[in-house]
View 1 (cartoon, helix red, strand yellow):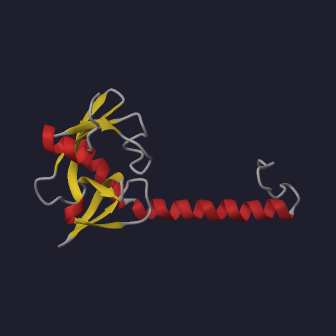
View 2: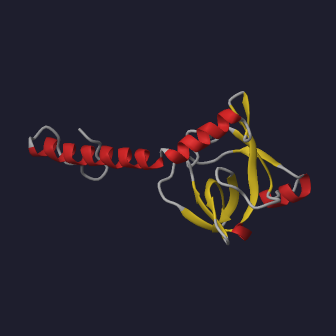
View 3: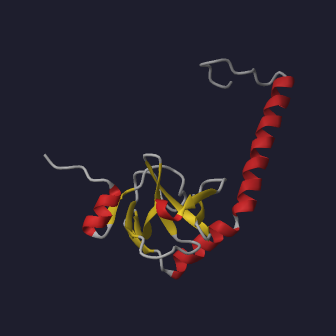
Length: 160
């Protein structure tokens, strides 16, 4: 029977971790259970736009560094809308490359770095759009219910 190693143990033993992604926090760059990541051990302080691997409780998290601080990092997933402060000692890996379908990307490629900069730069606009869209749907739903064109949902019932 083979032993199941933690990612940090694989990094220490093999010098890299190669595996699938799980979750949606790094969309649209990384798709849940489809893409493959290559993570290497963190050997120096990470920079803005690096993608850090760290643990939050028992869960592994792969999110983008927005800003290094004296004691750690301000980090956010590409598909997330709140920042997280992560201490330096919690970060043990950095994304160096990934495979999206059959295409291989290095995190040093100019095209990738343009994507990363654009993703960080458009955060406020994307957040505003998401909130505005939610507002329109909430108000629109109330208007439709008031006009009798849509009935209110009950538990277990699908929207009419």
